[in-house]
Image 1 (cartoon, rainbow, N blue to C red):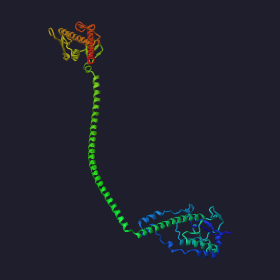
Image 2: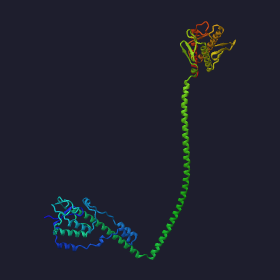
Image 3: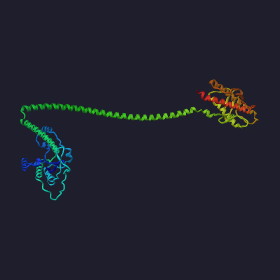
Image 4: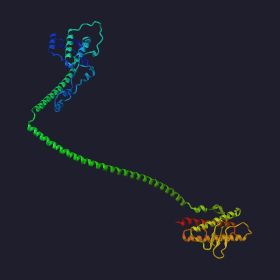
Length: 479
């Protein structure tokens, strides 16, 4: 025998009713209705909160605090995941549930299919979907409901009208409902215990107020209060003294703080001044170091530079010895002007004079007078003759050429005395050509009665000796 299918009012799963529920007699319904208490209209009334109830009571504050401590807050029970996913968002008023049940069950009854029992005890219809919306009627005049369905609907409407929960419910939703109701019951018991403790405390306070105090007890209490007052006054005075002392310490600390702030400001000013001075001195030191490095480079360059070598550049040009580019001597086939020769002799005499002055050496017999192309040598002792150190190409001027020879011989004599002085100062200095009277090496310095090639060679020997003397005077003498 198959029974009509209804849905759970919470999760909307189809349910199969038990035969014992369907086969209830009409007299059983009347018995159930008569045994149910009438539903109070205050169910839907506004429920005041605990705080509002506590404010309305005329009780001491300590009693109210005891009652608040005795009451433990609770949280609402949550439905199962199945019920949460399918629970409709609506209120659980009995009137709404009655109307919903009439609309969803009575007027639109789903088709009956083969039932399949679920694991949790509820029976699901195979191939049937949850009844969320009433289906459209197939025929304009549906057949009348059976006596069993009408009885079942009456029973569910009766239960839903007496409670805040819509019926019917599946086994799972019923279990969740039972857990929630049990939790509400526990919370209600705790609230009842809190009210009982509150009532006891109120009665105890009223008993104390009604009993009152005797005269002796009141006097003792007054004396105790006076002692407490005196003690409190003493403590207040001590606190006032301590406060005054602390105020003085605070003023002293504030004054000390101001002095420290002034010292700190002075310190930072001095610190900043020192930093600026240090930076300036660092910049000056860097500038001096850079200038010292540049001057050191210049000094090193100057030390390597020999001004005498630049002023008297001695070299050679073929068979001619040269001084500052001027050739000294004559050979056949190379016509060297006498003006060039005389200028070269002037530079040679100036070089000998410069070396003697640098070495602070004075000649005993002669005095050198460098005058460029017209230089000469004077004898200091004897006849104090003056010999020209320049010549000419005129053969008729034999007397002049003779004085020119005497001047060259006097030059060689002065050169020999300077070489002897240098050797006496430094024996390591060597000269390649020996000087003897008018000869230097193996050739004579005289021009008359001499070949020009030999005379030119002797002049070259003189320049070589002067170069050695100049090198020693500028390097060896300083060392």
